[in-house]
Length: 178
Image 1 (cartoon, rainbow, N blue to C red):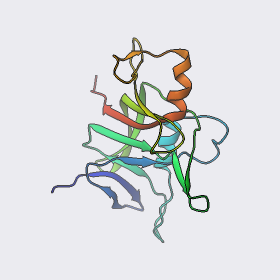
Image 2: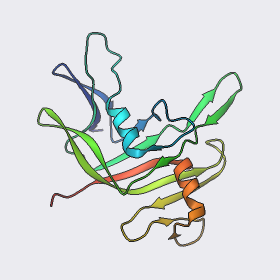
Image 3: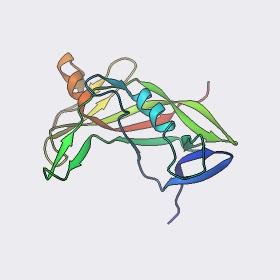
């Protein structure tokens, strides 16, 4: 099985692979957004600036490997509350742009590269094992939202809250130059 580095950090001239495989990059909601809202770009910036847990290494930067053209991001919406033996959902609204900038590690440096948000999986429910799953499809002309057993429909005002508070899996593609 061949693995591809998806997420790395750079510190003091040293590179270490943090995540391997063609998997998902997991993102925390940054501190200080509780009760307010955030943007996908703000979440990505906070991920990029995460401190490293390795002693003696300074100025970490989480990045996507330079040759990646497709990226999957998962927002950590659920926390296991051991004392209550249940999950708690963080329903902080996240505003989703059609395009965002990702930190890319390439040729010995970090650059910010545009990626289009192609699809977003949305969970509507209070636990990870209950509720409904929908897909939000942003687009320049119109955004679409799926319903079970039906064709995708134009996003309605009533859908925006569910999309922003339930978005958790983001599928992005690198923009083509030019």
